[in-house]
Length: 332
Image (tube, rainbow, N blue to C red; front, top):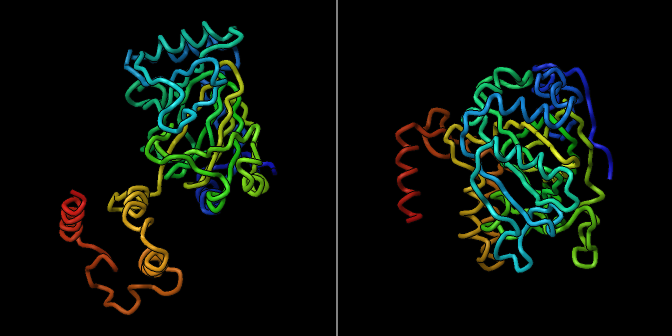
């Protein structure tokens, strides 16, 4: 396993023209080290908790709570029919106080506040801690918790994640390693997308022998407060939170076309409609997907008039609306 490449002193143009365009994970050292939240977090856990609570408007957030015996690993139950933690609703201030209270416990409950929409919960945080590498219209989310292990999973959007407090270890795998990561169930997943069945901190190669290939292709890095990491869409990443209080802010963007149709929804639809056909039918459909969707050989619109309005070329707003209606009717 190699180190994730790292850079420093990156500006907006370099980030988009070089890092994002390369579509490879990169650690960006000290990208938000001047944030007030990062500076306060260096003082003590109590200091950063007080800082966040000063912005709190008593909005309700979702919390994941796991018993001590899960050892911080939010995952499936052994029979894969459920999850090994509970979801609850709580105010941010109460959750932060609870994290401080159990920080010294030998076997604490695992607590994770995931994907907190900051514009709804801490609306004053973003103006005070601006992201220099992205358009201001992109909204941040916050992740808070104690020591935990999030299994490798993928995002459907590009991701810039920045550590405010604690340390986070990121282990990343390219998309082509999906078959070596042994994805779990898709509908009952801890974070909404399948996660790897492999415990990457102590992999069982007898049970998951191909993981050795994924591990050989993997990269990792430990991020300190102020550091950020760019993770392209569909790159698998496992995240270990290494301190008693860890806070991260991330930003998702890209990955959708102007039609706002999610590629992940299309994947689920295709899994329902194509994955269980016989092999010859799947191979035939693969040719059509290669031609129309992945455009691996020819441009499917190359022989058509440039001003033709069609799904193969460019849909008009009216055509898009009609096609949406048709697909909704078909799904019903």
